[in-house]
Image (cartoon, rainbow over all chains, first blue to last red):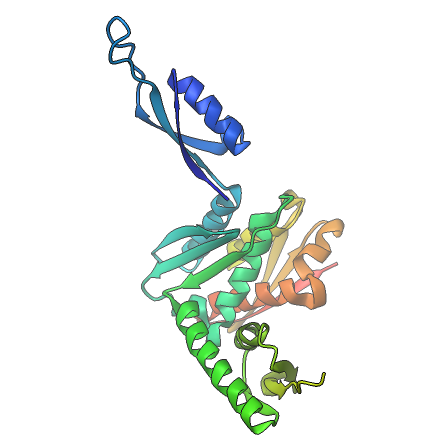
Length: 209
Length: 76
């Protein structure tokens, strides 16, 4: 989705109108930066069109950011929040000190916050955009090492043609494993066991199936 | 802790003005009772209690910071 465009027009108002048409947005939904005012020039010489940069503000980002700010306040934490939009996903990252309490044991609190943010941010919106929350890069680091583990264990399951059982993991960790191997046609992943013992098992899929 | 639960619950429901949290405080533990409009109960519980679970996780973390144990009850 294009959310920033630069448009030229005879006047700044005309340029903004063109941009809104192109973005299919209303004036309230965007931020306008005037890059250049139009100038009439002299006797038609050096006549310049206005140029504006128009950015769509996503209400979901604003809602999620506000909720994080209030949460930080309740925990008496000072931190900065940055956002980035990648395709339809909204990435929010919190950086600061003493944020371990918001990550929780094996990411449990981080995951809980993400769930709440997803619902709160998308409330009343027709199109749901996933919100991905990270704190101090915890998710990124954990996902990377879990994905590596998933790949290695899938290879083992295939080469030995045996079910490989991973160690017990939190729901967040299991989800990463399932997703990492979702597109791998050679294996199938299933969670087994109860509560603290719940773990992912990787099953080789034979070619005949 | 109370304000946090109120804030989070209000962000989830359709009738934020009907969100109410009452506290029952013990020495080392605290019970938070969350009340929402009857149409909104599903919104704070979620499928298989996922949202309620997430709220509990966050409130417990906040209680830990205050050196307490917290329980969240959803009243219907």
